[in-house]
Image (cartoon, rainbow, N blue to C red):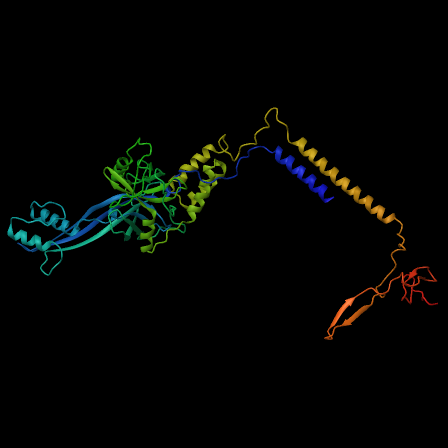
Length: 491
């Protein structure tokens, strides 16, 4: 019965598998290769200036206090938000000037107040007028008891997020930690953390850089302050072989030799993509930052970024916005536009200015219910000439029922035969024996150790055969009662 049932089940399973369609639409898929949407919501514009306040103590003639303040640009480029509170990673040279702003301010205030020609730079100069020259030298740092200038220099860093409507003021940040070189990473911490409980969108950081030469990447950043006329820019690039001794970072090279990528990316770095995240093509995570300029560009790896973050005591992490956005993005790239639309709406509720989510929501709504929307596609009709599935299912069901019915009747028949069969008579050649005609022979060795040994010493053939006088049952030679009816054997 068990074998027959298993056979029938196997036949049914085989028929069902053979008749199923070859392909089915998948419910969900991984993110496709090469996307940048995971990172672009977290790309920001970084602008830094040195704010110098200087007071010139002019006592050449009538004592005067000449107060001036100057904002000297340090750099501008691209950064990436790595924590919901608004913490950003970018390049050191964008937020820390190599110029001595105190010397620059001294040259400028002297040129403006005393009407002399002094180059507006951070170099120490001499004047032909001995009195003015002595006062100028006393204005230069370091400050002394006879100094003629009092100077205060601060750095002002402003972050402009990728939001709509565009932020005209951004938010202020301070430099928490930088690397040793101008093209090293820098960590910027907001002076006032992002408002709200969910904060800002963040970018996921990869754990390694692709080893193979020619690995495709994407670079995303801003060529100006974010706005309708300056949306984020995305460029395709390819990693070259490992770094060269004496040069920081990984080079870029086009494996097809169609584009001079170092020149192209170097020009974009000068225009605002310096510090832009380099996005891996495999999973859309950040694998490094763009450095360089002019006719060359390179990439510093993600390990340098995480190292500076650790020294700054910053934990790169993702937030609630990112979880909601990534879930909606997965549905969008799988062409389930009907299901993606509510997800993007949720992201905009959490972070109303998300430019990328707003654009993807518009596309999802435009394609919702259309021919490209897999979420509303009907099952494909059965091709002409193909065998329908239902005859096989009916045949399998009939076969299974028949097998079960046959097994049931077989079981009923065997049960009926066992109940109606007469009792078997006991064979005469097999006397009832409870073992009392056995005896044990014990022999003792010369050392008197007992060795048990069993031996049959009396058999039914050597004794006279006896029968019960009440029922006729055959008795053993030592039986005192009949084992069948219990009647005494000696009466």
